Amino acid sequence: MTLVSVIVPNYNYAASLELCLRALLAQTHQPIELIVVDDGSTDDSAEVARRLGVRVIRTEENLGPAAARNLGAAHASGEILMFVDSDVAAYPDAVEVSVRLLAADPRLGVVSSVHDPEPLIRDSLVEEYRALQYHYWTVSSEGPVSFLFSALMAMPRRVFDEVGPFNPRLRETEEVDYGHRLTQRYEMLLTTAVRSRHDHDDKLLKLLRKLYRRGRARVPLYARRRRFARGFETSSRAGGSLAALAALAAAPLAVPFGAAGAGLAVLALVVSLVADLGMYRFVLRRRGWFFLLYFGAVHFVVNVTIAAGVAAGVVRWVCSARFRRLYDPDPVMRQAVT
Image (cartoon, rainbow, N blue to C red):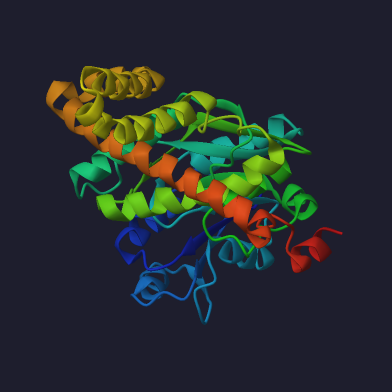
């Protein structure tokens, strides 16, 4: 049987780490080499892993998910590398299905999981919003993608060695960069055949800060590629976010311009809603009208935040040569690839 090295990067996720590791220990595929890379945690994450008999590699300081994945890969001996975030619980057959899919197609470099529409741990309505929104955006992107879904992904070791490690200088968008690099040589598959549950952010401000930073940090890469990634971040969804920001910006025009100003804001809002109409129908079927109203309000704020982050990224891209070079290969990483 194929040895699979499952690498779990972790930073202060003791609350979900046990659920993550128990799900991996219960996998139908064997043998598995399970490695937790505790990335400078200040909680009892390392003790949680050790209590379950899992090997732990600790860093002295927090290096970020890219560096943690690279460190785990450096200590792994499997033919297949599977990276699983510590806030994700895989279905029992996730490893087995991933190995089978990779073996069936040598052109396939990565297989990624689709998260369930229910969160791993129910903490808040915000988390339920995020689970539904993220599930719909991913499941509607199922198939070949160029946007790497790194929360649960499997890849042959030979592919990792050929493409090279994650860029350790990137802390927010290392998966977007890696997906861009990998799809120059291989295909990536996002599939509901590999399932998992994710402990999403349960605080709105925390989620908004993350989305703002990610939106801003994507600008240099998309400016270089001059096209959107295939899957998840589509031109339609980008337009919906920009329309939401335009609706907010146009709302004050109702004061000096009356109905004309208000009409402009309403038109922008309608465009934003139509951009994700399928998602709203999906939420309505699952949760009903009352939750849909809450969902729509939160998603409007999310769209505004994403668009604001992109706008800030454009300004920074124009003003900062260093920011424009954000996705230049790290010198150590370049040496590893060559």
